[in-house]
Figure 1 (cartoon, one colour):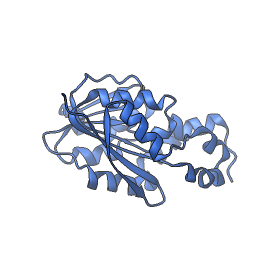
Figure 2 (cartoon, one colour):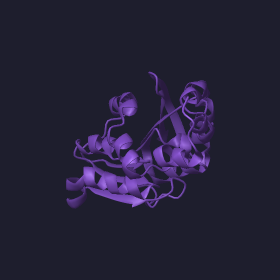
Figure 3 (cartoon, rainbow, N blue to C red):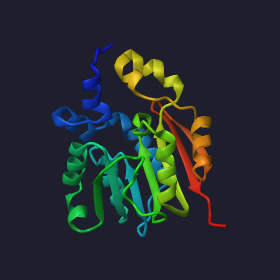
Figure 4 (cartoon, rainbow, N blue to C red):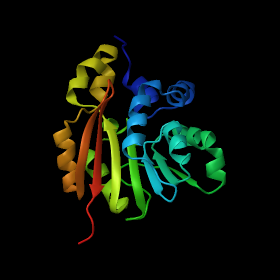
Length: 210
């Protein structure tokens, strides 16, 4: 088991940065299964405006942009925002991508403007989970959809075997808890699917206007 200080956990996971953060999030091999499943279950369309919350090094963002969609992406790590911009420089220069250093609980995005929101392998670090979900719901158009990959309580022991500090830093939410927060935010849960060895995918739709 690795003994990582809280500072190191921040540096490699919660608020990644520096060379180590760059390498981990430029080549996020452990996230690929979740990325693949999210794209299969909720593929972006060419005319979509999508939002990625917690974009990391921009690898999943690059896959989204291959659809021809426009994208907004946020991360609270300035290094990750910079890395995402470098990896997706053409889309950024062409006006198809906007990047922000921002908090998931205070998204710098206008209400009701986003077709699809993606939040993959980041939600378990958000200190205000229910408020963050409300923000994701707020920016979605009526009928817009959210895809979120996170880890259940059963993963705590697995993470703790690697790093006790990491397990203490992360939050492990039951799908039922996530569904309750989503409902309170005005989202309708659509499906929950296991992501082999990487948690679960939760998809929800913003309620249509009355």
